Amino acid sequence: MAVFRLGQSWDPLRDLEREVDRLLQGVNLTFHGVRTGRQYPAVNLHESANEYILTSELPSTAPEDLDLTIANGVLTMSGHRHDEGEIPEDRFRRQERPRGPWKRSLPLPERIQEDELSADFHNGVLVVRLPKAPQEEPRQIPITSD
Amino acid sequence: MSTDHPIEPSQDLVTANRIEDSTSAASDRFVFTPPIDIFETADGLVLRADLPGVSLESLELQIQDNRLTLFGRVETLLPEDAVAVHREFEVGDFLRSFILSDEVDYDRITARLSHGVLEVELPRAAQAEPRRIQVNAE
Image 1: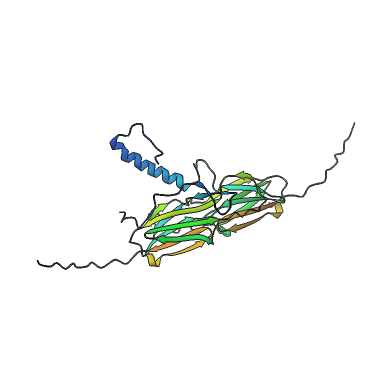
Image 2: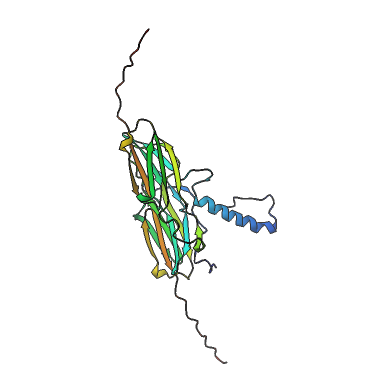
């Protein structure tokens, strides 16, 4: 299925069209949709009864390759891949996997217990649990008059 | 015939698709093409594929004729009652296949899975000795 079409298919250009089609299909198939300006890594945030759950696909990352900090309601995650830089560049026949160090900051939902956060890896997927803060009693605000 | 590429991703790749999952009527599943690296070592080639969420039990690696196929099933890590608040990626299974040339020694192919990365070692076959062909007189 061709995704790139020049106006008229002149013979000399048909090979070029086919080659570009092939390259573009390779790009589309490797990444989830068009990846322009997307942050790495992609994160999902889910909510259940007692907690928020943040998940992110981070293959090739061990706990010591990852840094997670929280301050002022912002979660900052940074890390690098475990197998970075082992192989000299000229040995690669094909290179599609993301590489390089990365860093991302995420504002967190309100009312979470910042000191109860926990994080786990499962087969290269990072799971961060953010327990919700318990409901607070309504507080009366004293009103002064002059 | 691609003799200068001992391993070549197969052209009939699967795009990010929803497919009807016959085992659970309620859900469609995505199938993704995982990104790969291929590099040379002294002994042959190594293939690495990012397969986050795939475990040893849910990974299938098969060779049929000269085609290597990997399929990784991904189960959700979320509890039943979890609702998406912000979604940047979909969870799905991984599928990709490759054509292996006869430079690869099929019997010595090994693989391991760690931190969501599949690493497949494809050792180079020993060079065949040149064979003399007997020419007969008429």
